[in-house]
Every structure is written in C-alpha cells, then in structure tokens.
Length: 59
Image 1 (cartoon, rainbow, N blue to C red):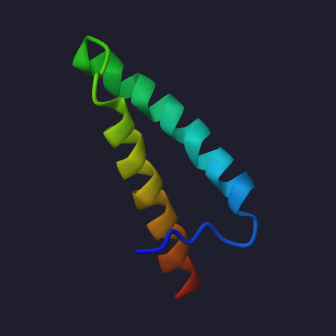
Image 2: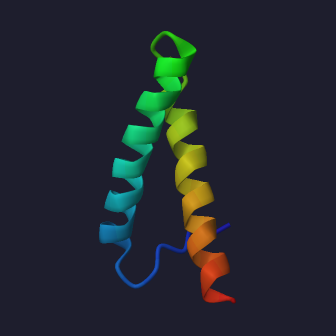
C-alpha cells in the first residue's frame, strides 16, 4: 500500500496530523485517560484520511 497524499504531500500530512491531534484529544477525553497506544491510533487516522484523498480522485 502506498499513501497518496496528493500533489503537496508535506502540506497534506501536516493537515492530517493536526486533525489527528484534535480527534485523538477528543478520543482520550472519552477514554478518560492517556492512550498508551497513541501511535497506532495516529497511524490508522493517517491511513484512513489518505485513502479518502485517493477515493475522491477516482470519482
């Protein structure tokens, strides 16, 4: 699998990481404690968001 981050991969990855930071903060709030597995959570978020870019290009 190759991540497709579009024509500006650094900018897109930056956006995704900022989104992930916010979303993960909400998740940890619901969890009620720090998420020790945060790296896997971020990785899943990045893959999911990059796949959205791929699917929107094929429409």
